[in-house]
Length: 314
Image (cartoon, rainbow, N blue to C red; front, side, top):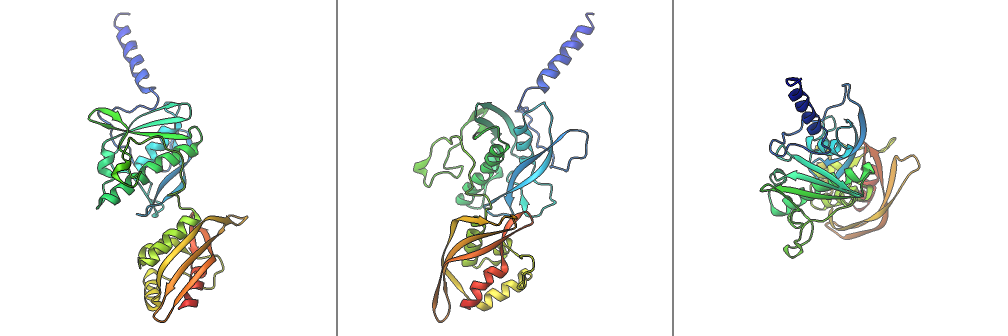
């Protein structure tokens, strides 16, 4: 009995550690394995996960089956999947985190979920400029916040970073929130935001930004074909030659934040206004309906609808 008791004690300790809700070893914090389609015996849950859209400052929602168990709350598995990144089956989905970012702890209180990440998050989100770094961090944080809030158990998420052994709220300006250093303060709880979700209006906004900047390869991310279209989207190289030949300069543009979606969910309309300068004159398109199509599980501007306005001015 004396020999058997230590074994029982060790087993009890292991069980206690394994059932600690939402906790990962803070010193080791091994990177999670890439997310794969579940084919094992563990139960799975279909979760709304927000990944980055290519390298754009936009998030796109993807419903993915994730293995879960009663050992941790469902938010733990969702955040773990976000940190692992997409499986690679959809090329437009890009992870917001690198291998240096680890989930160290999650806790909750009523409608709040508290998420503690390793300070490797700061390294993984560094960009080529201070502005790009701030944008990367804001996008990454909202990928967690939007995912957690859409799971339905919490309405607000507080992000912590473990720096020098202590969990602390990061600087809001360095995380991409606030306009100047004067806005600097500890980052507070965040709620779901559509500012960086690829909605129809955001898709139009990004497309017009790229068109005005002559960034044809990035504009291509936001174009698609409506079923039965007579004018179809050409290959990128052909489209680039076409736009360069037309030589239309977009000097100003706006897209209505409100939009309408068809009953079958396959198309949407966004009101747009923009100014076009040609070699001979300036043209203004005001409050024109631009059609979008739901393809590849994201909103894309109908190439036929887009070209209708450009060809008139050309």
